[in-house]
Each structure stands twice: as C-alpha cells, then as structure tokens.
Image 1 (tube, rainbow, N blue to C red):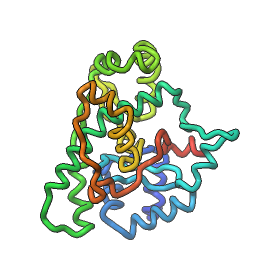
Image 2 (cartoon, rainbow, N blue to C red):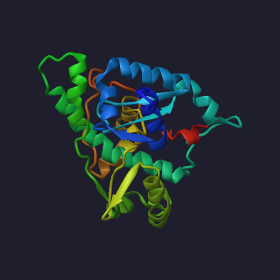
Image 3 (cartoon, one colour):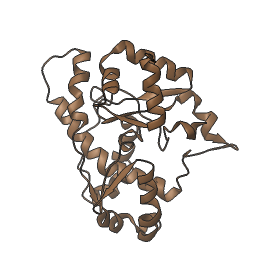
Image 4 (cartoon, rainbow, N blue to C red):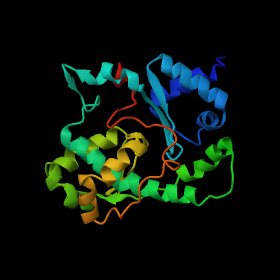
Length: 242
C-alpha cells in the first residue's frame, strides 16, 4: 500500500484539476505546515506551484511563475492562454470573474476584518475555511448577454460558444439559465494583483454603469489574499502545461 500522502495528493490534484477544501487531504494540507511544505517542494521540483487561497473554496496547481515563459512565450509572442480561449471568451472570463468573485471577496474581506479577537496564524487558516465556502451569487444568463453581448461578439456567439467553453473548463457552472461560480473561477486570477486593475481601470466604469460595483476603498495589505493565485487565464491542467 502506498503511504506517500504527498504524492497521493499531488496525483489527485493533477488528475482532478481541483479539490474542495473539505476534502480530508486538502484539509490536512491547510492545517499541517510540514505536509504543505513537502507538497509545495515536490510541486516546485516539477515546475508547478500550489493554489490555495484562504478565501477560495477549492485548491489546485498551476505553473510556477519562473517557468511561465517556457509555456506562454511562443514564436516571439506571449500567449494569453494555454487552453485555447479566443479573445471574446477570455474577455468574458474577466467580466464573469469581476461580477461573481469581486462581490463575494468583498463580503469575505469585510467578515474577516470584523474578527477582532487575536488568533495565531494556524488557527486563522482553519477559521477562514467557512468564509471560503460563502456562496457566490449567480448571474442570470439573459442579463449577462443583454449587458455585454454586443461588446463581446454578439449574444449568439457568447451563448453558443464562449459560455459552453468556460463551463467545460470548470470556470463556471450553468444551471437553470443562471451562471454560477465553477471550481476554477476563484483561482483564475491573482486577486491582490488583478482586483485593483478592475476597480481602478476602464472595466470599473462599465461595471458601475451596470450597478455591479460600488465605490471601493483601496485594498488593505493585511486583507489581501495571503497566497498567490494563477496568472490571468492560466489553466492549472497538467496536460496543458506539457
């Protein structure tokens, strides 16, 4: 019987792409510092890194940043994605992330800020798990298509091609004409790096016009995600990194 638990967890992450935080092995990873160090060391030896944000409901693996060029730099050009997303689908992913993850994260950060009792770092990690499972709010497909269809190649193209592609890749789930967060959506972008670009950039004006975003205060460094996520549009599927 194979008792190498680190190898077992890595194999499951590579094969299944994501694991929920309530999975026993994923849970151990989050509370056992020695076990996590061993997993991260083995991943690093293979050019990969762990994605385990304290506010995300799933964990996954992605390319180590120092090895991104080997995958994304092709023919003297930097590829935006290694999963074949066309530009309209990539833009839709950004919008869906902003519509679903940003409001959810704001609620999570507010909840975390309200916890004033002193806790050591390990206990904080354990206590953050319920916040990670806070349900995100879905987006009616007809509202998304009406608001952004013309900007992204037309309603029909989004409905027939872009949305099904994001669903197959695990970024979203479509249920009863409502778009919900998929297991990879919260890991698709580094929140601490990417959120300010949206909140302070051109997309912010568009989202505010749609009533999605309120005025946001600057991100507090003490409340930013305490673990890095994957670069924009990077897919943690191991086959795609080969």
